Amino acid sequence: MSYLGILCFVPMLTNRDDEYVYFHAKQGLVIWMWGVLAIFALYLPGIGKWLFSISALGVVVYSAVGLLSVGLNRAWKLPFVHSIAALI
Image (tube, rainbow, N blue to C red; front, side, top):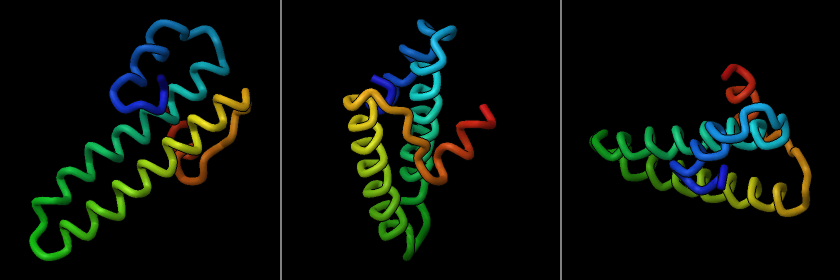
């Protein structure tokens, strides 16, 4: 559930002592925050729709890769996302 939007909070709050689950929950939180911030890009005149489209595509791709890594029982460090998640 970590990579399914706001559902990233469920494993983050329930399995805090499991390092594997918490790793994916933190990455899912960063991806979710990126999606929320992308919505605010729609308010930018001119470039807003383009920036939102690129960000939405990035969120979908990163979420799919995250779900794939969970399905394969791996802990892939997603580029850009992991560096921010490590700060949490």
